[in-house]
Image 1: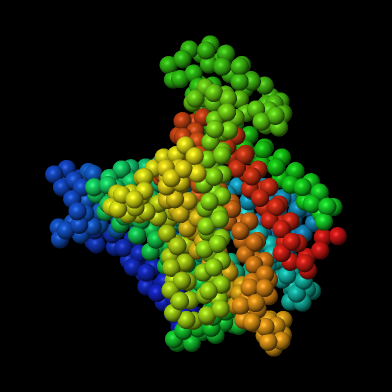
Image 2: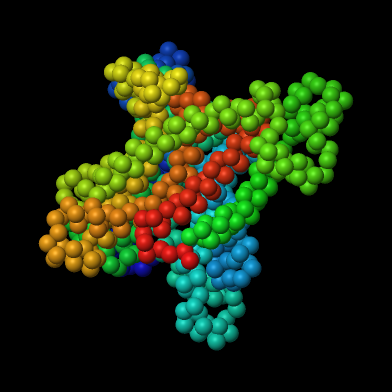
Amino acid sequence: MNKKVLLRLSRHRSARVGGALLLLVFFMAAFAPFLAPEGYNEQDLIMRLEGPSLEAPLGTDHLGRQLTSRIIWGARITLQIAFMATAIGLVIGTALGLTAGFYGGYIDRLIMGFMDVLIAFPGILLALAVVAILGPGLYNVMIAVGISGIPRFARLVRGSTLSVREKEYIEAGRALGANDPRILIYHVVPNVIGPIIVFATLRVGVSILQAAGVSFLGLGAQPPLPDWGGMVSQGREYLRGSWWVGVFPGIAIMMTVFGFNLIGDGIRDALDSRVRIAGKGQDPK
Amino acid sequence: MFQYTVQKMIGCIPILICVSILVFLLVHLTPGDPARLLAGPEAYEEDVESIREQLGLNEPLHTQYAEFITGAIRMDFGQSFRTNRPVMQDIRDRLPNTFQLAIVAVTWSVIFGVAVGVYAGIRPNSLGDSVSMGVSIIGVSAPSFWVGLLLMLLFAYQLGWLPASGIGDSPFTWDGFSRMIMPALTLGAATAAVMARMTRSSMLEVLHQDYIRTARSKGLNERVVIYRHALRNGLIPVVTLLGLQLGVLLGGAVITEQVFAWPGIGTLVINAIHARDYPTVQACILLIALIYVIVNLLVDLTYSVIDPRVRYD
């Protein structure tokens, strides 16, 4: 992203809100040992299912663990899963999309045919199928959610590559004797990166939701890890009398995804020169 | 049109074959021996061997796939490891419940999403636009299972207006209908939010077109301009999105059904995954993918109905 895009992004109102939310989550994740009142698995059975109070601002769960601590520690797990899963989809999907779009022919048909097969599964179902193979667990969720992102990145990158590969600067690169990997890395990638960045940012949000969904179904990170999706799942059992156990981790998930969605929208607008971004407000389009 | 439909249908066949191979490999890629799993950890090796024989697991992989696919075509996926009933019977019992939920969720989310999108699209940057788009982006960001729990907390536990979970005998009785309200709202919430956002941006795009200016300059009523001229064209990308959203909805049903203990295909597949009941997992995933592919084909074919510029022959 060049300076101009960053400047436009810094002026984008909703991107600012999204940025502030994400800063908070990153801060929580980075400084969890200092911010959290106690460890994520420190139990105090006398304090079990206590409502929000000065002593426990977000209440305690069925084992008397402070929800404030668990949510702060949980930011680490959520961001870890979201970024790793998105990175898996991004790296493999981009490589496949670039190859398919750049070489065309049977390579394109083969790769995109396989992507069509993967895309025939609804995202969360593909993730569940992969977890069914690998078994539940933190790292398996990352892989499962990451795999469900691969065909989506591949389709996007292929489309952009197809339009870029016919451009004159690619021909010029070839005339200068550049080989295919060099052309792909130095000429194609920089010109298709815009939509990839936007999609990846929005995809982080989707990854968080999918991973939380898998955890909610009991197939994600296993207790006592403070996974937000798993915490909502535990909260379901105590919903009637102790609503805070399930409600607060859900708010944490929503605010984080909300932050990524706002930033994603902001980057999209900042990269699109047709969109007017003023200090206050912006064009509807 | 007929030729296009046939071409598209033929195009789906290789995808479905590959999907079936992938689903078949589910069992064979899984660490552990399904026969041992079925026999139990204490079983003698001879018993495990006889189960392996019975399930055809000693056969070469391609023979097993051929048996699997011929069974799938006849809708015979074998016995469930968990319930000991034919898998298809379990699916037949539950599939109508999922369809019932999905249809209600799609209906309300499309009506509500398009209405809000049109409202926001014709009043860009107004207070109503900002509020509805703000709510819709929150709707996209909230995990569906959490939305479900909030609804349950409010309407079932606090107000006591609706039953918390389960399914009624018939959706046409108050008991059946009231049990469907919260799951359908939960399942359709994200789709409604996405629909509203897409309809809004599509309407904004269309309202700047020349033919809208022409329609207005002819002195047509604004209502006619919006509903007859703008909306019809503005809905084309929305229909594409609907196709994609149906996949999200089918996946979402897995989670929503779990929240509300709704006995559909979603709860069946989750229980099967937990119990490592592979025949059921295979059958459910294959069936959902099949439904997804068919729905997308139908969406593809709908274009010509709403957009006469699309010609297939």
